[in-house]
Image (tube, rainbow, N blue to C red; front, top):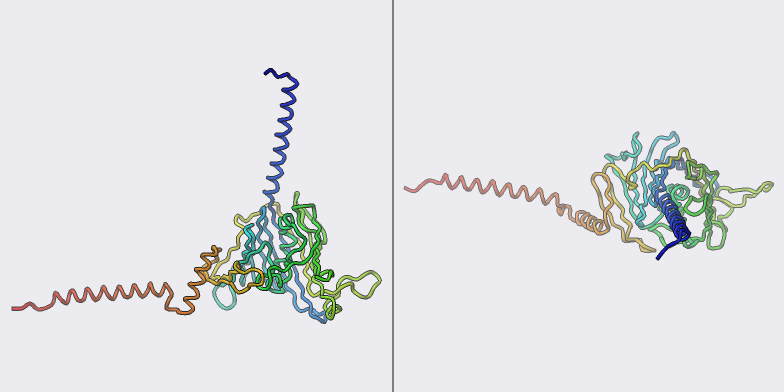
Length: 368
């Protein structure tokens, strides 16, 4: 069938347009999937007593590594002179598990050297897509919220969220705890948050995250700084703890706070320099494996050790290591290493005895 020039050019134009559109979509997908960056900064966490005095201050220097849906936070707790005290590495690799390891540090940040002896670390694994602190002094949840939560917010289908700052939402208390929330992103879906508000059951604000400014490197935009505040519960303890924001001309604070974190960014890089976004450590490591915990069931914890560094094993292997550790604790003589030594000793004695008997038989006097 003949085809006119008009039909030919019309078809060619449509094909070119479709091809161009496909390429644009492919490029867009490629850009999103190849997103990576690093953020350096410092975080100061202050916890207040009921009378408003300072209970304690924890300072951390951190680096956040992000590649696609995966992230890793390397943080070092320092003293008032910026001397390193403790290190921690926590990561998520889009498999529904949080990996974390930490310990004491010497003058070389990241090397575990506690004061009580040789290098020793504590590692933790639990099922989640965010790092929910299991202590009131947790710092990682705040760093994650402002600098590594872009993919988390882009995938949300509800506004009832787990509060990462609340240890009551951790796997050791109740991992099903949720609070109603509102959030505002810096640059639309897929970007990091500018402001996040969590509410109590009675409708009053429970906690807030708010950027103090925005900075960027290329197309990557992050909060140049932020403030987190967990407010005191209304009621008996409402007008205690530390005063929060005040209205101009008023002498009474709008609210009171029991915890405040202030973060500041010192550098941003449009690359992710770590090849593997999985925590590493040197020295002996004790693993507290909480992957089998769920809801209010907080008893299924596996414990096992590694003599040099840390390994992130499957649940099946974790169970085997846990059972072997339990058997060894109940009966130290059951240590496979001890059995190996005993077997070697037994075999050696048996061989020596056989040789001795052989020569003895050769030396037996002959009958005349």
